[in-house]
Image 1 (tube, one colour):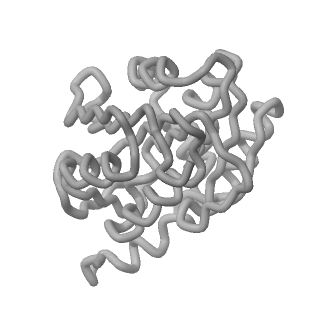
Image 2 (cartoon, rainbow, N blue to C red):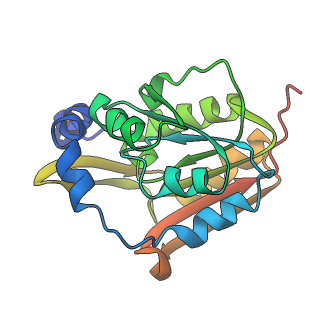
Image 3 (cartoon, rainbow, N blue to C red):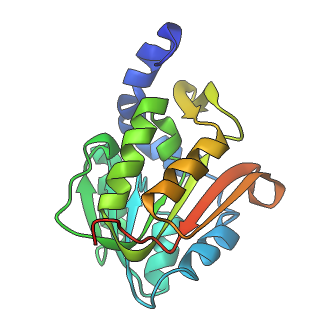
Length: 210
């Protein structure tokens, strides 16, 4: 349940990214502080495997790096302006306008990454999205997400506009994904080497439906 005073900000998330896509892209840090975790994610994947980047933004630096490593990248984002930027930069990828909450692709992937995107969902939406991610993973697939270091709702900023963020308690992520069939789950909270991000890396997915 979203706090009533945050509900309208949550509803405007896509609108903010659509209107401020170019500014967001220009203001994004150019230092690739995510690299260590993306490399750990890659280590869980088969060479040249298929990766779904949910909330791909402008494609830099994560989708770009995955493409450079010869992965087949499909990026989805709810803001058409973001998808347009990614598509213009990296025509070798596949780019789709789609809301994470209504993710429905007739395909499974070796890995799914949701960097600085998944945490825009409300707690109930996150629980539902985790189930949807599992349905889009191949056997032995991996999942990398940025989360919060504790349960709660906070506000962030995008080009001077407020945006909504939320997190479950990290132990709940662990419980959900363990029950879903992931063999290994790594949680790193407030990683100083990654800009203070809190990370969740789940690997060795075994679908209970075969």
